[in-house]
Figure 1 (cartoon, each protein chain N blue to C red):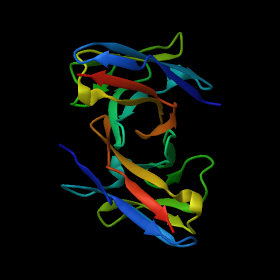
Figure 2 (cartoon, chains in turn purple, brown):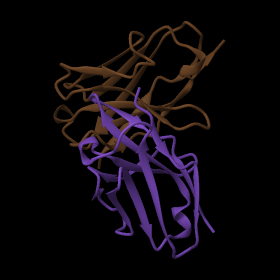
Figure 3 (tube, rainbow over the protein chains, first blue to last red):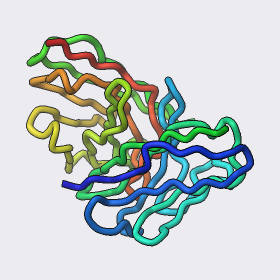
Figure 4 (tube, rainbow over the protein chains, first blue to last red):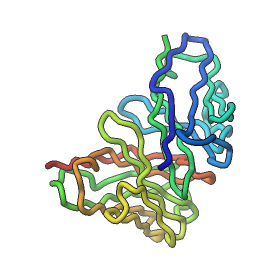
Length: 109
Length: 118
């Protein structure tokens, strides 16, 4: 069974930089898993930020970037803003389906 | 503008059945895979099922395999999810999502709430 891991919570100061990660309980994440990232604010549907590791979805500010760091996928927010305070989910494409991580609650303060 | 509008959610007893629908517009529906993703109250996201653009192949999470059936009608731009033998743990908001080119979910509907009571 594939288990995708994310930090449960993270905090960043306004204007700061934060990197959220997406790993596997067993093994390494590579671009072959086509990692994608989603932002969800309370009461709203998720929206896609990053797909295929490092491609930004249309309309997503360039302060959001995706990469592979070591053995994990990563989402970096550079110059965090107050409205970046949200839940962030990664998903890996596995066996023709997706496996989501548990999500990271990002606080901007 | 891509729009995905789910319907069919509601309250059902454990062991019962429900059929969700998703009306799609703003893109060429028959060209894209579609998915259902769910979110239990206060919990994270869980991929449920995927169907290829032509409808000839379907895939399911282990948690719903054998109980749920995904289907699509490309002539009506509609995606469906038939849910049988529902369990309390199936209670969630169910989102219809458009499949991107890399196994991603590039557009989401607003979701429909399914509540399974014991």
